[in-house]
Image 1 (cartoon, rainbow, N blue to C red):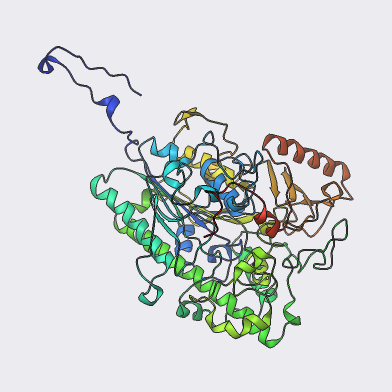
Image 2 (cartoon, rainbow, N blue to C red):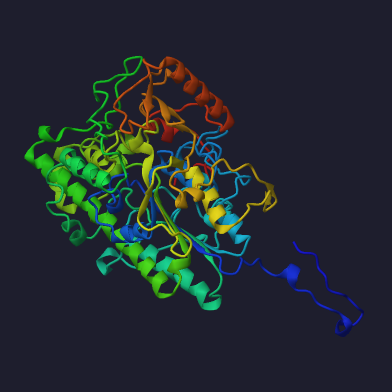
Amino acid sequence: MAQWSGRVATDIRDSEPDWGPFLAPAAPAGAPNVLMIVWDDVGYGALEPFGGPIETPAMRRIADSGVRYSNFHTTALCSPTRSSLLNGRNATSNNMACITEASAGFPGFSGRVPFENGMISEVLNARGWNTYAVGKWHLTPSDESDASSWKGRWPLGRGFERFYGFLGGETNQWYPDLVYDNHTVEPPATPEQGYHLSADLADKAIRFVRDAKAVAPQKPWFMYFCPGCGHAPHHVFKDWADRYRGRFDEGYQAIRVGILANQKRMGLLPQDLELSPINPHGEPDITGPDGRAWPALDFVRPWDSLTDDERRLFVRMAEVYAGFVSYTDEQIGRLLDYLAESGQLDNTIIVVVSDNGASGEGGPNGSFNENKFFNNVPDTIEANLPRIDDLGGPSAYNHYNTGWAWAFDTPFPYWKRFAGYEGGVADPLIVSWPAGIAARGEVRDQYVHAVDIVPTLYELLDVDPPAVLNGWTQSQIEGHSFAASISDPQLPGRATQFYSMLGMRALYHQGWLATTLHPPLSGWSNFDKDRWELYDLRTDRTQLHDLADEKPELLEELKGLWFYYAGVYKGLPLDDRTALEIMASPRPEPGEPRSH
């Protein structure tokens, strides 16, 4: 704080005031706004700018005005990635080894982001930016998420001035559980009146910015916009789903061929890259070291093995999902239109990411009620087919099947939760700043990670994060800025990255990836008997050629590095328990148990 430099006399008339130390912080003149858009469970090959079949003109608009990163990575799960996106530390350094609902009483696993790991919202708010969080939060533990809770880990407790959205990992798009700032509210309308959460969130985002700009047009803002799309439930108006009638009839195996062709044409992937095969390890027949089965929900049923009714059901699930994403993209487009019309778009840094790969939580048959996944209850065609016309509507809580997760992660194997495979961790990244970035519609191939977003923004904003923030001595930021690569595509990317998720381990180092074949939520345990694989991602991003037997010394080096970083980043113990076991584990409750 500046020293007061006025003068005090007995009479105020003879005194000299100095307002400097008492004023709110002010950002530098001309400082840019920042809009971080976080898609949910949207895989590498889903969106139009990444070769996907889902029309997303707003995303294309952003990509055309900036750069796409073809080699961006996340943690494979939502809360862990989101914690890294907001403060530049690894997920386990943020005590966010898993989602907040699955917290455990260990360092790295508590589901409580330390205040020593300051968020960009806190840093920028202290430097004069308005700060807004809109949409999904999922960074508050369950026992601190009710009306009676201490709200220090709610968005307003972590540097955001305004919040409108939902605290948990998902919500009903028709009847959402909404929080406005620090209190719960009811949706402003019903689906019969045309309500949908994605539109509501865009309305609030525009309102937050407009309200402040009406008073202080020169003041910059930071917005964390997370619509919760395309996380289940996949809810959308029927006419939006119907726009995709017939577009997925060829099935998920065939559509991957076209997606990869688009990705090659766009320069996102090498011309000689091959698609990952279906069920690359022979799932579901593979077993763990003690003979325990592969998780029943984590494999793909071949398209040619399906009946006509099954194909019809699965196609409709994809149509609903695509309509959901396109509808949400249109709402983001309304936000971009407002920024353009109000003269703000050119000086707004926009970062677009997804938090993990496409979701496999619908299992091999898809689901009319995604909550079955969390209770280890497989869906059946017999139960879902009669409800096909209700998919996407208010009576459903639907999720597509694993075949579409695999397709929307084209060309990679597996999906969300699989941290050792590109389908779980490779995601879209777009960076745009028309006034500050000369590149237009270009591609960058550097290996970057979610932890690198915040330090990149700090460099673009010319902000040095403080050593002490809100009274807390700050830990070291673990990410590295890739800002220079925006203008120089030849610069190297990240050299090393640690991964651990739900029992699966991986370590990226100088182009190589060592990973365990240990399915998440499998309950296999026996980690000392894990099978390790080794891939050269520089030439084999679809992980077709396991080189573990050919390069045993390199594999041992990477295994050792994994344990080293597990110590640095609080990555132990390993937890591969089933979803039902994790959710049933004792953890703090907001109050005493009640019987009524």
